[in-house]
Length: 421
Image 1: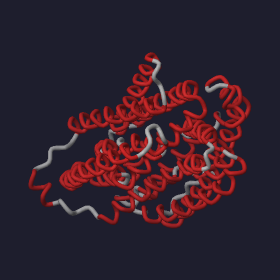
Image 2: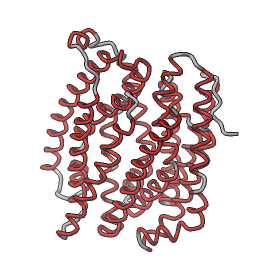
Image 3: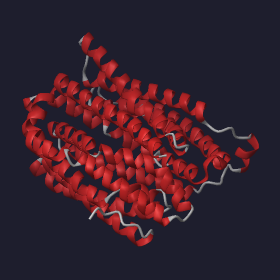
Image 4: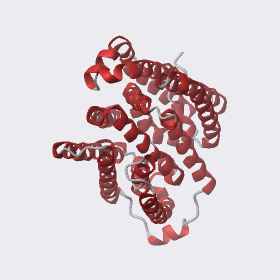
């Protein structure tokens, strides 16, 4: 079993490393070719994609993962009905966004910010379908299969398309966003293929019998959690774009990429332990929950810690080498602040899957809304004065506070200590 978990960790780790590496290379390519203004415009427009998608289907992957983790193959009809509902919803979403974006593309000035946002929003229908496939595949304890389309295939496709535009001499923010749309569509089709190969066999009568069994309130809670979690990571970019600090938005996006690399071990561990936490909680095995939490938290912290001194002492050189000297002055402080905040947050352990996978999603939502509000207030205060560094500080402070509050709730409700100290 330990060897199996190690192989899963390596599989997920290699995929996440590829994804983050590809995202970093894509950011480098876009930053150098488009320049600070053009890259900032790309970052601002693309920030609307997750915000538009998550209210619709953002909660379904986590909900499906939890239900399968608790019930395994016996939940097949239960989950198939939910997926059928998600497909119907996605078809309606597709019609709505195609209509709205067509009106927007005709109405707005070509290549303006609203016009480019409409291009980005065409990604939403594809994300709606992909989210459902991802949740079921993860719930079947095949996280590497679930993550492959969006972690490997999508960035690979995006890289190929962008390089093609570069070779043709046509890479602009508009064509970069078209490439993102094409890569998103291809990733969704790949997820569908994987789902069809792995899905359990379910009698039609079982689907009809379980058609309304999943709680709409629970689904709404999961969707709201996904929305506010994404919003929390996009607030700084949106505020800087609203302030017309497009170079600051570009700098903050680079800092966010560095932060994602820093917490890569935590991200992988959370994906691995989520269905196991759901199963242990369902069987009331508190000792198993504590053991999973302690090992996961320590492993994540130990694997993350070496990144901090590298950023502190060599961050300016890395930014100049990867993105160019023009980005160093605006980006360095933001990277240091955000990475330091991510590292401090690791002291509170793997809090996210413990609340989400044990039926405490509403409590998690309340804490997340408070964190979002704090992040927004701090960003509106600090970003106009300090630019990307101020937005990064707002994000770091809100992240530390919500992780601390999550750890307190877990200790109170589950009697599990997540803190490393």
